[in-house]
Amino acid sequence: MPFSSLLRVQNATFIRGGRLILKGIDWEVRRGQHWCVLGPNGCGKTSLINLITGYEPATDGLIQIGSDTFGNSDWRAVRKRVGLVTNTLTTYLEPGEPILHVVASGRDAKLNLWQPPSATLKKQAHGLIEAAGCGHLKKSLWATLSQGEKQKILICRALMAKFEVLILDEPCAGLDPVARDQFLSWMDEISTWPEAPSLIMVTHHVEEILPCISHVLLLKDGSVLAQGDKSQTLNSQALSTLYGAQVRLSHKTGRYALQVSSRP
Image 1: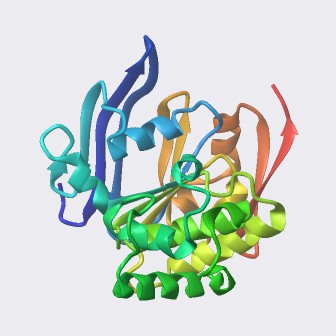
Image 2: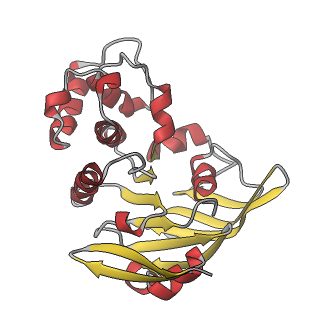
């Protein structure tokens, strides 16, 4: 694997319950790249992320993070280099957990701390919360936050660990239009930070593709439809095939929009 590679998936196949979900996926994320994994519901996006993070084993193929290969390395240690922000994480956090503790717990990938974090961790957590524009929440409890606020706090928690890759699995799910726009603007800002991780945004909405996204992976029915540089991969023809309908992609003020013009 080239030194600049952070993540590599080679001929990955995944079968569950007799159903072929992923079919020979090849994909590589290099240092400095930001990716969007785009596709309709049921195309295999979440299954692909589960293989990368080690929560599901591939039926066949190769998963590599840096020089570590799944099956030959301790993925509990490898997982500390790849952050995952997903709504399912919210179900494991205690309602009464202080926000500072939620963020500080990201350093060691723990949840619901048994004892207060150190003064150093608290200071770092507080700095991230302020950077997210959530300084007014620093004394709040987890249960009192809105969905948008929870997403920002989970991002802060992930950034505490200084991941090389940060996967955002449907990060805007449940957000109203204003909260979604504010959240996406903040994520685009994070991408400019000197030590920002490579972002992988998983979504089925082109409207959520940030200006910082450099590459796109299009998944359809468990296979790679197309992948590569955003400017070459993302177009009306490819998206019409992806979604099975005639669509028109437009790009304005740094953001994309999709209009469905006909259905099969």
